[in-house]
Image (cartoon, rainbow, N blue to C red):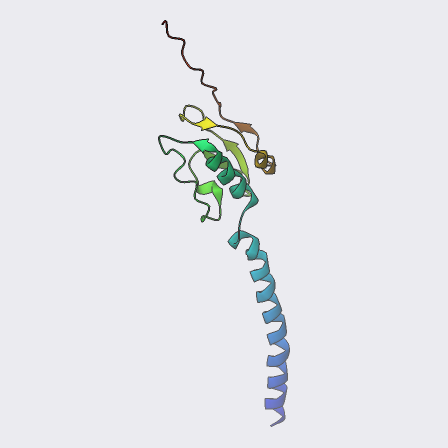
Length: 120
């Protein structure tokens, strides 16, 4: 009978650290599951652009990680390092939220298109 009591105490004392560990792991995953500031910034950019060819169709705000989006490159820590929108037939304006891309090293050419002058 004493052995059963000791076994229950051991099981109870082990349950707390396991529960605490599981809780800690779930808290660490919450930022990934509920949003990504870099993804939010890029999606804000997408909303500010006219995309007649739908080249930014993969920029889905429901996807946790923008590293899976076309035209976006990330480092090994899943931080955006490059956005390549050159030759994409996009128009619009840049947004201040792009400042959230703290690891951005270079961006593709953003070409400003001018209307052609046609003789009258």
